Length: 322
Image: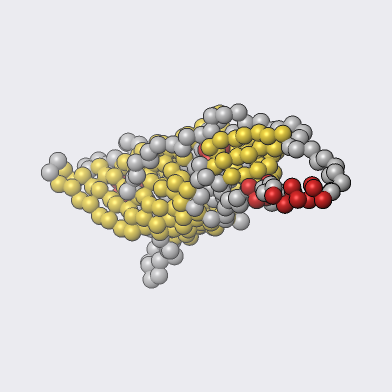
Protein backbone atom coordinates (compact mmCIF):
# COMPACT_ATOMS: atom_id res chain seq x y z
CA UNK A 1 0.00 0.00 0.00
CA UNK A 2 2.97 2.25 0.52
CA UNK A 3 3.77 1.81 -3.16
CA UNK A 4 0.22 2.81 -4.09
CA UNK A 5 0.63 6.18 -2.39
CA UNK A 6 3.99 6.78 -3.91
CA UNK A 7 3.08 5.79 -7.47
CA UNK A 8 -0.32 7.50 -7.46
CA UNK A 9 0.78 10.82 -6.01
CA UNK A 10 4.00 11.02 -8.00
CA UNK A 11 2.14 10.33 -11.27
CA UNK A 12 -0.55 12.93 -10.69
CA UNK A 13 2.08 15.26 -9.12
CA UNK A 14 4.88 14.68 -6.62
CA UNK A 15 3.92 16.79 -3.66
CA UNK A 16 5.90 19.63 -2.25
CA UNK A 17 8.28 22.01 -0.90
CA UNK A 18 5.80 23.15 1.68
CA UNK A 19 6.03 26.78 2.37
CA UNK A 20 5.57 28.45 5.64
CA UNK A 21 2.35 30.31 4.98
CA UNK A 22 2.93 33.20 7.29
CA UNK A 23 0.81 36.06 8.33
CA UNK A 24 -2.51 37.19 7.01
CA UNK A 25 -3.31 40.58 5.51
CA UNK A 26 -4.70 43.04 8.00
CA UNK A 27 -8.30 43.65 7.04
CA UNK A 28 -9.92 47.11 7.24
CA UNK A 29 -11.38 47.52 10.72
CA UNK A 30 -13.48 50.63 10.14
CA UNK A 31 -17.16 50.86 9.28
CA UNK A 32 -18.33 49.70 5.86
CA UNK A 33 -21.63 51.26 4.84
CA UNK A 34 -23.57 52.25 1.76
CA UNK A 35 -23.71 56.07 1.85
CA UNK A 36 -26.88 58.12 1.73
CA UNK A 37 -27.91 60.49 -1.01
CA UNK A 38 -25.58 63.42 -1.51
CA UNK A 39 -22.60 61.70 0.16
CA UNK A 40 -19.46 60.58 -1.67
CA UNK A 41 -16.76 58.28 -0.29
CA UNK A 42 -13.01 58.52 -0.76
CA UNK A 43 -11.18 55.21 -0.36
CA UNK A 44 -7.41 55.05 0.07
CA UNK A 45 -5.94 51.61 -0.69
CA UNK A 46 -2.89 50.01 0.92
CA UNK A 47 -0.82 50.74 -2.23
CA UNK A 48 -1.64 54.46 -1.98
CA UNK A 49 -4.27 54.56 -4.73
CA UNK A 50 -7.25 56.87 -4.17
CA UNK A 51 -10.78 56.07 -5.37
CA UNK A 52 -13.78 58.42 -5.29
CA UNK A 53 -17.33 57.13 -5.54
CA UNK A 54 -19.86 55.15 -3.50
CA UNK A 55 -20.06 51.65 -2.00
CA UNK A 56 -22.96 49.83 -3.67
CA UNK A 57 -22.64 46.34 -2.16
CA UNK A 58 -20.91 44.89 0.92
CA UNK A 59 -19.78 41.25 1.18
CA UNK A 60 -17.78 39.26 3.73
CA UNK A 61 -14.36 39.97 2.22
CA UNK A 62 -14.99 42.44 -0.60
CA UNK A 63 -17.11 45.42 -1.66
CA UNK A 64 -18.45 46.80 -4.92
CA UNK A 65 -17.55 50.45 -5.49
CA UNK A 66 -19.15 52.71 -8.10
CA UNK A 67 -16.88 55.39 -9.58
CA UNK A 68 -17.11 57.73 -12.57
CA UNK A 69 -15.16 55.09 -14.53
CA UNK A 70 -17.54 52.25 -13.67
CA UNK A 71 -18.15 49.70 -10.91
CA UNK A 72 -15.22 47.70 -9.50
CA UNK A 73 -14.68 45.00 -6.88
CA UNK A 74 -12.27 45.78 -4.01
CA UNK A 75 -10.96 43.32 -1.41
CA UNK A 76 -11.60 44.60 2.13
CA UNK A 77 -8.04 43.62 3.10
CA UNK A 78 -6.72 46.17 0.56
CA UNK A 79 -8.58 49.14 2.08
CA UNK A 80 -6.51 51.48 4.25
CA UNK A 81 -9.10 54.15 5.04
CA UNK A 82 -12.53 55.46 3.99
CA UNK A 83 -13.62 59.09 4.27
CA UNK A 84 -17.09 60.44 3.55
CA UNK A 85 -17.82 63.93 2.25
CA UNK A 86 -21.06 65.73 1.46
CA UNK A 87 -21.28 66.47 -2.23
CA UNK A 88 -21.45 70.16 -3.03
CA UNK A 89 -24.77 71.25 -4.46
CA UNK A 90 -24.61 73.06 -7.76
CA UNK A 91 -25.27 76.78 -7.27
CA UNK A 92 -26.45 79.01 -10.08
CA UNK A 93 -23.53 81.08 -11.28
CA UNK A 94 -23.84 84.81 -10.67
CA UNK A 95 -23.68 87.28 -13.52
CA UNK A 96 -20.07 88.02 -14.24
CA UNK A 97 -18.81 91.56 -14.07
CA UNK A 98 -15.45 92.97 -14.91
CA UNK A 99 -14.42 92.73 -11.25
CA UNK A 100 -15.48 89.07 -10.83
CA UNK A 101 -13.62 88.10 -14.02
CA UNK A 102 -10.41 89.58 -12.63
CA UNK A 103 -10.86 87.74 -9.30
CA UNK A 104 -11.67 84.47 -11.13
CA UNK A 105 -8.38 84.66 -13.03
CA UNK A 106 -6.42 84.59 -9.77
CA UNK A 107 -8.28 81.57 -8.28
CA UNK A 108 -6.71 78.15 -8.96
CA UNK A 109 -9.13 75.66 -10.60
CA UNK A 110 -10.67 73.07 -8.28
CA UNK A 111 -9.68 69.44 -8.84
CA UNK A 112 -12.53 67.32 -10.13
CA UNK A 113 -13.38 63.89 -8.72
CA UNK A 114 -11.98 62.31 -11.89
CA UNK A 115 -8.67 64.12 -11.35
CA UNK A 116 -8.54 63.02 -7.70
CA UNK A 117 -9.26 59.43 -8.62
CA UNK A 118 -6.27 57.38 -9.67
CA UNK A 119 -7.26 54.32 -11.72
CA UNK A 120 -6.16 51.13 -10.00
CA UNK A 121 -5.74 47.73 -11.68
CA UNK A 122 -8.58 45.28 -11.06
CA UNK A 123 -8.06 42.74 -8.27
CA UNK A 124 -9.15 39.49 -9.91
CA UNK A 125 -10.72 36.76 -7.76
CA UNK A 126 -8.70 33.58 -7.22
CA UNK A 127 -9.10 31.47 -10.39
CA UNK A 128 -7.77 28.30 -8.73
CA UNK A 129 -9.54 28.13 -5.36
CA UNK A 130 -10.54 24.42 -5.42
CA UNK A 131 -6.94 23.11 -5.49
CA UNK A 132 -3.63 23.88 -3.90
CA UNK A 133 -1.22 22.20 -6.35
CA UNK A 134 -2.11 18.52 -6.59
CA UNK A 135 -4.10 18.41 -3.36
CA UNK A 136 -7.69 19.65 -3.12
CA UNK A 137 -9.03 22.38 -0.88
CA UNK A 138 -12.46 21.97 0.73
CA UNK A 139 -13.98 24.43 -1.76
CA UNK A 140 -15.99 23.62 -4.88
CA UNK A 141 -16.84 25.26 -8.18
CA UNK A 142 -20.11 27.08 -8.71
CA UNK A 143 -22.75 25.19 -10.69
CA UNK A 144 -22.01 25.35 -14.41
CA UNK A 145 -18.44 26.60 -13.94
CA UNK A 146 -15.37 24.57 -14.86
CA UNK A 147 -11.70 24.62 -15.75
CA UNK A 148 -9.08 22.75 -17.75
CA UNK A 149 -5.80 22.00 -15.99
CA UNK A 150 -2.49 20.40 -16.87
CA UNK A 151 0.16 19.12 -14.44
CA UNK A 152 3.72 18.51 -15.61
CA UNK A 153 2.53 18.75 -19.26
CA UNK A 154 1.69 15.03 -19.38
CA UNK A 155 -1.20 15.00 -16.86
CA UNK A 156 -4.18 17.01 -18.22
CA UNK A 157 -7.65 17.06 -16.70
CA UNK A 158 -11.03 18.78 -16.45
CA UNK A 159 -13.16 19.94 -13.50
CA UNK A 160 -16.83 20.97 -13.53
CA UNK A 161 -19.34 22.15 -10.93
CA UNK A 162 -22.55 20.11 -10.91
CA UNK A 163 -24.08 22.16 -8.09
CA UNK A 164 -22.60 24.85 -5.85
CA UNK A 165 -21.58 22.10 -3.39
CA UNK A 166 -20.74 19.19 -5.70
CA UNK A 167 -18.10 18.99 -8.42
CA UNK A 168 -16.31 16.31 -10.42
CA UNK A 169 -12.77 16.40 -11.79
CA UNK A 170 -10.84 13.81 -13.72
CA UNK A 171 -7.94 13.27 -16.04
CA UNK A 172 -5.11 10.95 -16.92
CA UNK A 173 -1.59 10.64 -18.23
CA UNK A 174 -0.48 11.10 -21.85
CA UNK A 175 3.14 9.96 -21.52
CA UNK A 176 4.59 9.13 -24.95
CA UNK A 177 5.57 5.46 -25.53
CA UNK A 178 4.33 4.43 -22.06
CA UNK A 179 3.00 0.87 -21.93
CA UNK A 180 0.40 1.83 -19.33
CA UNK A 181 -1.39 5.13 -18.82
CA UNK A 182 -3.16 6.27 -15.67
CA UNK A 183 -6.76 7.52 -15.48
CA UNK A 184 -8.66 8.92 -12.54
CA UNK A 185 -11.92 10.60 -11.54
CA UNK A 186 -12.53 12.57 -8.33
CA UNK A 187 -15.99 13.64 -7.11
CA UNK A 188 -16.03 16.17 -4.25
CA UNK A 189 -18.88 17.17 -1.95
CA UNK A 190 -18.59 20.36 0.11
CA UNK A 191 -20.20 21.14 3.46
CA UNK A 192 -20.20 24.83 4.34
CA UNK A 193 -20.01 25.29 8.10
CA UNK A 194 -19.71 29.04 8.47
CA UNK A 195 -17.83 32.13 7.44
CA UNK A 196 -14.44 31.28 5.88
CA UNK A 197 -14.71 27.60 6.94
CA UNK A 198 -15.45 24.70 4.58
CA UNK A 199 -15.44 20.91 4.94
CA UNK A 200 -15.38 18.47 2.02
CA UNK A 201 -15.29 14.76 1.23
CA UNK A 202 -13.33 13.53 -1.81
CA UNK A 203 -13.07 10.11 -3.44
CA UNK A 204 -10.36 9.55 -6.04
CA UNK A 205 -10.62 6.46 -8.23
CA UNK A 206 -7.38 5.50 -10.04
CA UNK A 207 -7.00 3.05 -12.90
CA UNK A 208 -3.41 1.90 -13.40
CA UNK A 209 -1.77 -1.34 -14.62
CA UNK A 210 -5.19 -2.92 -15.17
CA UNK A 211 -5.94 -2.39 -11.48
CA UNK A 212 -8.27 -0.01 -9.69
CA UNK A 213 -7.24 1.91 -6.58
CA UNK A 214 -9.29 4.21 -4.35
CA UNK A 215 -8.33 7.10 -2.09
CA UNK A 216 -10.94 8.60 0.25
CA UNK A 217 -10.05 12.00 1.67
CA UNK A 218 -11.77 14.43 4.02
CA UNK A 219 -10.39 17.96 4.23
CA UNK A 220 -11.05 21.31 5.87
CA UNK A 221 -10.13 24.78 4.58
CA UNK A 222 -10.09 27.94 6.68
CA UNK A 223 -9.56 31.46 5.42
CA UNK A 224 -10.42 33.66 2.45
CA UNK A 225 -9.78 33.00 -1.23
CA UNK A 226 -6.54 34.99 -0.91
CA UNK A 227 -5.14 33.58 2.36
CA UNK A 228 -6.10 30.12 3.58
CA UNK A 229 -4.85 26.89 5.15
CA UNK A 230 -6.04 23.36 4.37
CA UNK A 231 -5.65 20.10 6.28
CA UNK A 232 -6.72 16.64 5.11
CA UNK A 233 -6.77 13.01 6.23
CA UNK A 234 -7.45 9.99 4.03
CA UNK A 235 -7.18 6.24 3.48
CA UNK A 236 -6.16 4.27 0.39
CA UNK A 237 -7.93 1.02 -0.41
CA UNK A 238 -8.64 -1.51 -3.13
CA UNK A 239 -11.53 -3.90 -3.65
CA UNK A 240 -10.10 -6.32 -1.09
CA UNK A 241 -7.71 -4.35 1.10
CA UNK A 242 -7.50 -1.09 3.04
CA UNK A 243 -4.42 0.74 4.32
CA UNK A 244 -3.60 0.28 8.01
CA UNK A 245 -2.71 3.94 8.53
CA UNK A 246 -4.07 7.18 7.05
CA UNK A 247 -2.17 9.66 4.92
CA UNK A 248 -2.24 13.32 5.95
CA UNK A 249 -1.85 16.57 4.04
CA UNK A 250 -1.29 20.14 5.17
CA UNK A 251 -0.93 23.19 2.95
CA UNK A 252 -2.00 26.72 2.24
CA UNK A 253 -1.94 29.77 0.03
CA UNK A 254 -0.86 33.36 0.67
CA UNK A 255 -1.61 36.06 -1.91
CA UNK A 256 1.21 38.59 -2.03
CA UNK A 257 -0.35 40.91 -4.62
CA UNK A 258 -2.96 41.14 -7.33
CA UNK A 259 -1.07 38.76 -9.65
CA UNK A 260 1.02 36.48 -7.41
CA UNK A 261 0.66 34.15 -4.44
CA UNK A 262 2.68 31.50 -2.64
CA UNK A 263 1.22 27.98 -2.57
CA UNK A 264 2.50 24.88 -0.78
CA UNK A 265 1.38 21.47 0.41
CA UNK A 266 2.98 18.48 2.11
CA UNK A 267 1.80 14.86 2.25
CA UNK A 268 2.81 12.51 5.07
CA UNK A 269 2.67 8.94 3.80
CA UNK A 270 2.80 5.99 6.25
CA UNK A 271 4.31 2.65 5.29
CA UNK A 272 4.80 -0.84 6.65
CA UNK A 273 8.59 -0.75 6.56
CA UNK A 274 9.25 2.94 6.02
CA UNK A 275 7.51 6.26 5.90
CA UNK A 276 7.82 9.22 3.60
CA UNK A 277 7.04 12.83 2.89
CA UNK A 278 5.94 14.15 -0.48
CA UNK A 279 5.84 17.90 -0.90
CA UNK A 280 5.46 20.61 -3.48
CA UNK A 281 5.43 24.39 -3.42
CA UNK A 282 6.01 27.43 -5.54
CA UNK A 283 4.80 30.70 -7.01
CA UNK A 284 1.31 31.07 -8.48
CA UNK A 285 0.91 33.69 -11.22
CA UNK A 286 -2.70 34.86 -11.49
CA UNK A 287 -4.87 36.31 -14.25
CA UNK A 288 -8.59 36.88 -14.68
CA UNK A 289 -9.30 33.37 -15.98
CA UNK A 290 -6.08 31.41 -15.50
CA UNK A 291 -3.22 30.62 -13.15
CA UNK A 292 0.29 29.27 -13.74
CA UNK A 293 2.21 27.51 -10.95
CA UNK A 294 6.00 27.24 -11.04
CA UNK A 295 7.98 25.58 -8.26
CA UNK A 296 9.69 22.43 -7.06
CA UNK A 297 8.76 19.06 -5.61
CA UNK A 298 10.58 16.64 -3.34
CA UNK A 299 10.14 13.10 -2.08
CA UNK A 300 11.75 12.07 1.21
CA UNK A 301 11.82 8.39 2.21
CA UNK A 302 12.90 7.30 5.69
CA UNK A 303 14.29 3.84 5.03
CA UNK A 304 15.70 3.49 8.53
CA UNK A 305 16.95 5.58 11.44
CA UNK A 306 20.26 6.11 9.65
CA UNK A 307 19.14 6.23 6.04
CA UNK A 308 17.19 8.95 4.22
CA UNK A 309 16.58 9.20 0.49
CA UNK A 310 15.54 12.49 -1.13
CA UNK A 311 14.53 13.15 -4.74
CA UNK A 312 13.88 16.57 -6.29
CA UNK A 313 11.87 17.54 -9.36
CA UNK A 314 10.78 20.87 -10.91
CA UNK A 315 7.04 21.50 -11.00
CA UNK A 316 4.77 23.41 -13.40
CA UNK A 317 1.03 23.49 -14.06
CA UNK A 318 -1.65 25.80 -15.39
CA UNK A 319 -5.42 26.23 -15.02
CA UNK A 320 -7.84 27.83 -17.51
CA UNK A 321 -11.40 28.60 -16.37
CA UNK A 322 -14.44 28.46 -18.63
